[in-house]
Length: 310
Image (tube, rainbow, N blue to C red; front, side):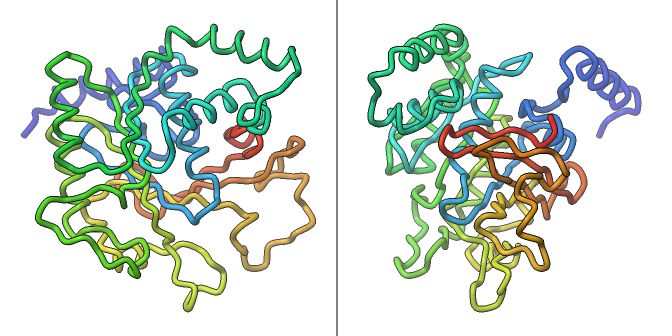
């Protein structure tokens, strides 16, 4: 129970923070203007879900988000990234690419172009101090108990991150909860969402998680668009999730009635830079703001993601 005075004081603090930092006072800013407006930042004790079809750019979006939170925005914050699908070395390679706009091909396989190497060194030197803001854990077999133990240790050291991001929660084991059958693609342990929500509450942090789950029933949806009910069928307790986001790539999804010829313009009518394509974040469940869509453009060769029109 709160007094009206306390509530009004919090609102005034929020407005002052927006004035100074152009970001939410209560939550961690994503560094993306319109995404922050949609979800009011990443708020403590809240659980966020980002779901996408395979090969639609989910990891690239998460890495751009993390780089924005920890390095690029006006008021950077600390973050912990559990990368359960790719190694820490590959995470670093992708971050190098999206920070410098050097193609992944040059970074993966190397290059003899001295100007490219020089650019990478300069870009790393510019962010080397702030790069300590991002912690990366890439152990592929993780458990709820392991995550709790690591966060407890960080809290004891006064190093608790402002936000925790987990890429591919399907790899997380839950003690006492049977692992789903291998042919049940995308189904998660029944208590996993509840355990993740408890972590967000107990450590007073926002928790953004991403499953290896296609929120699509191909036998029902001919448009291949994601649906909330598919997540429910896969043991996602939606009443415990504060915000559900679907990453939608128009190159992958078939939009009913959408014209194919205007690829030089984004959905909002802005010119599309060479090599870029559209990426949309659809928000069908939002306890922090409106049901809406936030529009981005992305270049997968350089792992770059920008908000459309910003």
